[in-house]
Image (cartoon, helix red, strand yellow):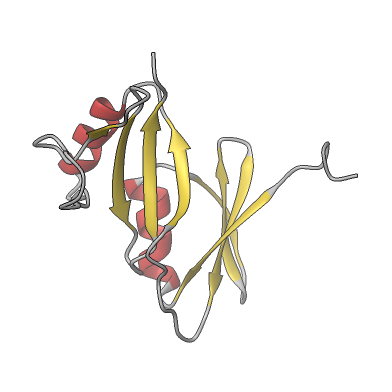
Length: 125
């Protein structure tokens, strides 16, 4: 039934102005619209709705992630925009915060302005 339906992704923010700047200007998503309930973006053909909420406790797990051709290039570009990659003491990450998984995939994590955890993954060769 839902196997052919388009998915809609959701996130949350307590400050839609700050969140819109991050997702549009820093991450480069295409802004679609803003209403009283959410800021909506096109994220590679998937609609991403960042809901406006009164309070938010970010989860410790990844909320949203992107598969990218070169995690190194994306991390370098984001660092140029002031984004800092997350570091985890239990993972062996390189100087840019990139972890190479046992499969060979390269993964980096970052947080949006509300503390929501996002990931970047370059699939294994």
